[in-house]
Length: 164
Picture 1 (cartoon, helix red, strand yellow):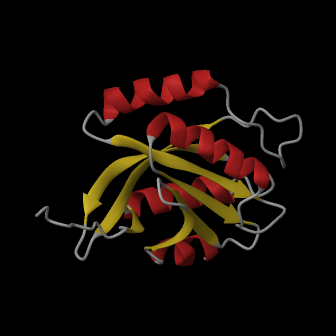
Picture 2 (cartoon, one colour):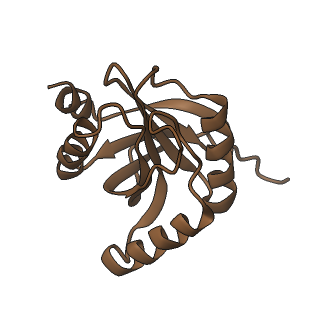
């Protein structure tokens, strides 16, 4: 008789490296009205009780190519080639984990453009995190994985650093 097994759906969370938090705060606060974006580099770790943790260690900013700097223009594919070269050179043991950008005029909720772009990244890289920082300086982190798209929890230090 075959053995029946079931696999529990994992729980996802994220950690922002403290140095990364400080660099992000500086980068974002010096561009308060500009929508910024960039790639996130780090590691994926297993936690206790079926948890997958995205350990975010570095951010590579992409220039905003929109005619209006308060709006977002999807980066061209060439920027992801640059990101990969940069990652291989500086962080050869880390992975591309996702994308971060700001909404200087709105909340940290996903827009339809965000969802569309995140799904393109998911097809290329597998499960990813997509972080949005809204005009109120609130951070939301979404995980696009094989199961669903979901809001995930993580280190709350960032919320405090960005709002100071």
